[in-house]
Image (cartoon, rainbow over all chains, first blue to last red; front, top):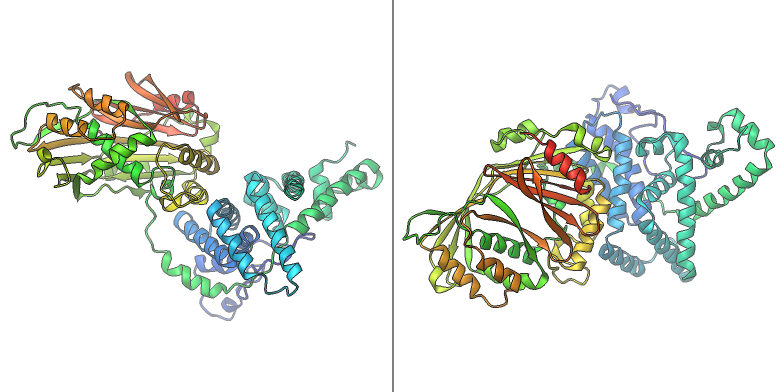
Length: 202
Length: 387
């Protein structure tokens, strides 16, 4: 059975990751298997373990549930074509592919405009105050625009980290050591602040 | 002890216990590092507030049910990710027309009298400058005939160079590892092959009267390709730049060679990361029944709207050696002759320096090496290529 490494929830980052499926704990134990039920196929295990997190990563970029799920499914299918589901780098590959695919979609100007128009129409059902709705939409628009303009390397480390990945996980996804993640993150956060400031001061 | 790096200070904010004791002790005693930490923490808090996203519930089982049936789908064509790089339908029609035009650079320049005669068997390549205006004239040719494929040109993705050779029947491509630049060293490699395709172009009633009812037999390939780089990324980048479906931002079909489509293609290539492609194929050949090259040439020149450069090119098609035309967008790329494998080839470079390529024909076979590399890098790879 494929075993997943411990994935700590980092402090300081948003914890809205939906990557914890009911079937698998973070330690990779499958309760059903312990009860004597047949084990899941390796791809299914990987999917159940990582789908929520991959969607969360894509949603962090796109702020669109349907498109985030679309990206996640595309990423899993692509992984299935190219790699073994029990590859030790599976999670890191999926995380990186999710953010890159989502960023590429975000940078599609036409789609971005369509998305923003749709969001403007739909509003946010969790907020009732129209002023808040407008503010939230503006914040989202600024973030999407900033992510689209940032260099891919900077946007990637921000999205991965703020999707709840630990330094170790971000490092694995980027192919760098955990100690380098801090440096990249610091630079990316500075760049993000400048981008947002630039956009709001125009 | 030296002051702590920004990376360590940033990690100290998120994961303080992942930072070693020595660094933590230094931090506690160093006002300067504490001051830097405060600035870093401030930026981190700003990022955290900016990056917030609404939590979304997902039904992972339903998603798995949707994905499972798609796992057996065949791999997309190797060409699929490259669609949208700037060649849209009108441009493609123009390109095909340009090839047809060049196909009239004959090796046998005799009236055919109904016999099948080889009219196109290129032994060297040359560039044809295509501008947006040129395409307007060339596009009309696409309505002259209908194409029937006995064997369609289909690029099939395979797992290795050996398989590509097996499928295509061509010798296996061998790239000299020492010629690959460092940016390509760890890049994923994709292979594809195409069996020989054969088709018939039948001139219809929309063609000039002297051509109607005649046919051209076209033979393409076989071919094999090797691509270094992430094609998935390239495909995503192509779609991401809004170039999919052959439409531009305002919904109008883009013309190959226009500034806008070239700019989009460049953006796509930049986003795709390092890419290198190698293509080997048997030179395309065409034969004709019922029509002479002189007749086709005359009909082409009678077409209104041809640009002076295309008109001049058609007029010069009396060279029996035969040219394989390489369409290049006017003002966007440059081309010049180079020596490769002891023959004269054509080096093509993007004017912005984004990428370059080289094409040459050797013993009836077309070779092309191109990528987001410098001309000297491309030439080193091309000269190191063996089959």
